[in-house]
Image (cartoon, rainbow, N blue to C red; front, side):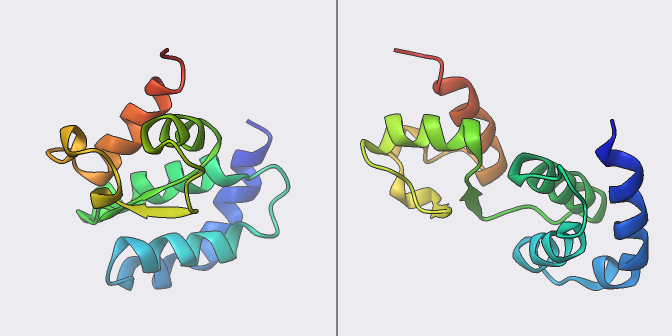
Length: 114
């Protein structure tokens, strides 16, 4: 909760750029740059903000972005440490029918399995 007011202010300053970002990667980058000055806005906050703003614009990720929970689940699924951003094709075929944001969500849950 303490991050939200500062994040809102930082994102408001770059709203015009967020509205014209051509894809999720660009949107994520713009939000990351805006939130650098906001203490406590870590990778999960960044990703969730980009995903929600992207959904508003009908822009979704085509790769899986790693943060704490996703990284743990991806390590289990890939049997190796993941890169910061992984293509869907890096994951076992059973995950192939999922969209990147769906796979990110599944990996967060998968970290608690096994």
